[in-house]
Length: 427
Image (cartoon, rainbow, N blue to C red; front, side, top):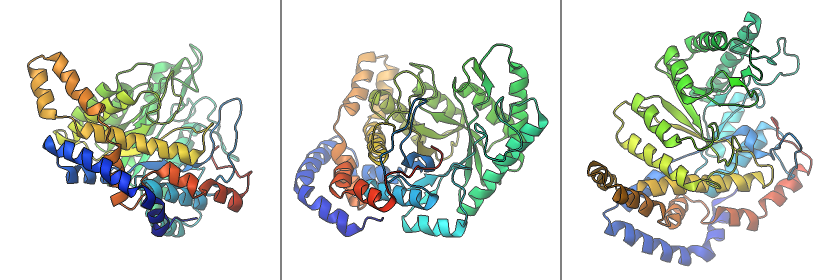
C-alpha cells in the first residue's frame, strides 16, 4: 500500500491550529535567541535515516518470537513498508539491504519501486555470521578471521558479491560486521585472528569501487563471550586505517560496554576523519537493541552535540555520515517502533542544533563548569517537538505519525493484504 498526500492532509487538518500555536511560541522563542528557524527546519529535513530491510518484521529473542501479522514477506513488500514510514515521517528516505536475506531478483525493477516510494539505497550489509543453505564452508568458528584459507576466501567473495549487488542498486557503501571471536580462552590465537581479519579486509578493500566506502563495525561481545576480533572502536579504526582512505569506523550505539562515553568516541573519530556512520538503538545493559531514546535520551543528545559541532568544524574532512536504525521489535508493532525511533533521532538532533556553541566554548575557556552544564541542559530541556513537527509538515508528512498510522488502520490493512502468518526474511 502507498499513502497519498491527500490522506495525510486530511489526517493533519484537525490538528493544524493547535500545532500552529505551539510552533509560533517556539519559533518566537528561538528567534529571540538569534536562531535561524528556516535553517533549522532545512537541517532537520535533510537528516534522513536508513531503515534496514530486516527491521520491518517482529524481532525475537533466543526464547521466542511473536508476530504482529501483515509482515513483509519479500523485498518488494519491505520497500513498500519503508515507503509508509517515509510518507508519515519524511525522515526515512533510504533502505539498507542485508545480503543474502534480501537479494533483488530484478535490480532495475527494485530501483524503480524504490523511486516510486521516494527511497534511495544506503549501505549494503554482508552476512558471514550465519551459514546459508548449500554453503560450502561453515562460519561456526569464524569467517574473515578463520584459520582455513578456504573459509576466508568464501567470506571475502561474499562481501565482493554484496558490493556487486549494491552497485546494481546505486548504493555507495558496504558495512562489514563480524561475529568472529572466541567463547573460551585458548580457542584461537588472538594475534593470529586479528592479523587474518586485517588481511581479509584488505582483500575486500582492494576490489572496492573508487567511489565507495567500507564501514567496519565493532562489538565487545556476543555471540562470542570471551573475545571478539573487532571488539572496540580502536580496533575498528586500526583496521580501517590498514585498509585505506575509504575505510571508516561505524558506531552502533548498542555495541559498547555499559556506561561507555560514546560521545567521546564520536569526537575522537571525527578528529581523525574516520567516522563513517551510525546504527541507532538504545540499551540498558548491553546490546539490547531497544527503541532509540527510550532509555538514555540525554546521552543521545550529547552524541548529537558532538556530531553537530564536528560537522560544523570539519577540519579533518570527515565525509557525510551514514545513518541507520538497528533495533529489534519483539514487543511493539515494528512500524510503530521505527516511527518512535525516527522521532527520537530528530528530537535529539534538533536539541543539539540549539546549543549555543560560542557560549559553550567561552564557558569552557573560563573553566565555568556550571555554566557549561547549564548551556547544554537548556538546549536539552527545550521542547523541540513543535519544530520537528513543523519540519515534517512542511515536507508533506504527518504531524503525529503514530496517531496517523493507527487512525488510518495501516497495520489492519497490511494484515488483510498479507495475512497473519508472513515472516520477514532474516528473522
